[in-house]
Amino acid sequence: MSIKENLHQVLQNIPPQVKLVAVSKTKTAADILEVYHEGIRDFGENKVQELTQKYETLPKDIHWHLIGHLQTNKVKYVAPFVHCIQSVDSLKLLKEINKEALRNNRTITCLLQIHIAEEETKFGFSRSELEACLGSDEFNSLKNIQIGGVMGMATFTTNQEQIRKEFKELKSIFEKLRTAYFKESVLFKDISMGMSSDYELAIECGSTIVRVGSSIFGERRYNL
Ligand SMILES: *Cc1c(COP(=O)(O)O)cnc(C)c1O
Image 1 (cartoon, rainbow, N blue to C red):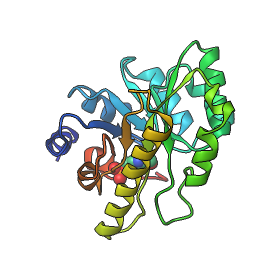
Image 2: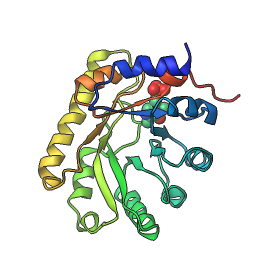
Image 3: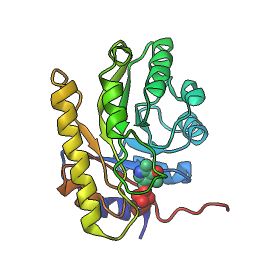
Image 4: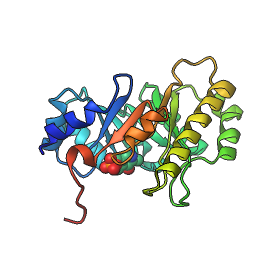
């Protein structure tokens, strides 16, 4: 099937209130434009250099989401244009994003990446790190970031029940944070969870943003 056909197949499974971020990492500008011309404006990349190169060559009304681990020394490259940094996992990073957002006269939307998987290797705040961060005066003094919600990745497994458990946990953390720290903010609203293999399950569990790559663009090939 073509990229266009894949996209429409995926869109059939996504209710209108859930946003699709098309994950275009490793894919060409031509592939991205195929999806763009079908009306999609949100794209996700996981590497800073690839993201900035694509930003420069592709239409400027694209909303770029950074979904991969971000080092503080690279924030400056994406701060001028990034729409949302979904992979924020420390107060240190939030402070740097705030600083660069201010320099660019912007407010940058960030999602708090939360560690819900069993694997140690996945990034994200633990529960205790989250509370320490959100409860701190330092966090509350950051005026050029907007916390838009949470993001998480489930364990890499075929066990649907395990994945469901982790998605439900992320939803429950989101609700607790909303009550405890973001009661006044209507902008704290998003739960980014679900990829090609599990986005339908994620939507059942309350996802508001799904990040789908290979089901749209086909398998990724590295080291070519
Ligand atoms: C690559 C990636 C995705 C998309 O994965 P697919 O399985 O290709 O849909 C989603 N989220 C993150 C954080 C990713 O790195």
